[in-house]
Amino acid sequence: MARNKSKSEPTWSDVKAKLVPFDRTGLLGLVHDLYAASKENQMFLHARFDVDKDGLEPYKETIARWLWPDVLRNQHASVVKAKQAISSYRKATGEPAGIAELMVFYCEQAVGFCSSVGYQDEGYLNALIRMFEQALAVTDQLSDSQRGTLIARLDRTRDVGHDLGYGVGDDMDSLLAKYVSA
Image 1 (tube, rainbow, N blue to C red):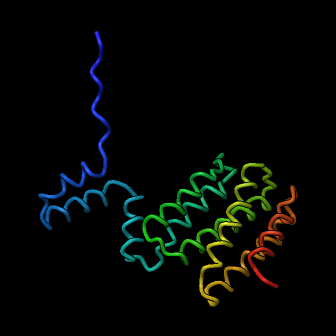
Image 2: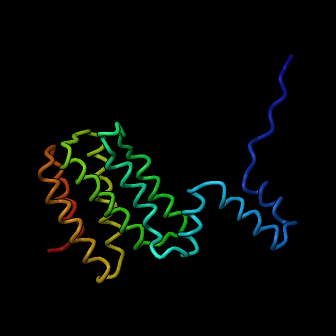
Image 3: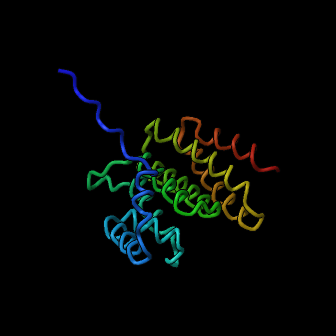
């Protein structure tokens, strides 16, 4: 007996069609329910509507947790989860200065953790170098006043990168020279 093909997965168009009959009160109720459903939704809405005095803080907390885990509590690092925080912020606001700040913070946390505990995971270090380049690329698009502080922080990160071995500092030297004219 042949099985019937299952209905295709729902899409945004399907959801959008269901939203059409909602009035203002109904939409507010729906957004409230989404807000209450998860911390990630709360972070997204806070960032999107700029209602938190430091909308970057929850994203930084996530990055710090996953890039600088508490090894005494047997926590593990996760580059993927740290990067997801940046991606979530990008989706919520798309604001380049905030994205650059999170990327620079990522680099600071990663080199700090490696330097502090002697962490030498190749994938972690490769992700650090890729994020360093992405941070430089995004920072390069900012105004001079915004760019200066972030470049100085990346330069300090590069200095620490030389102590990590595996050519991390050398790679950072090359990237910094590529994006910052002497």
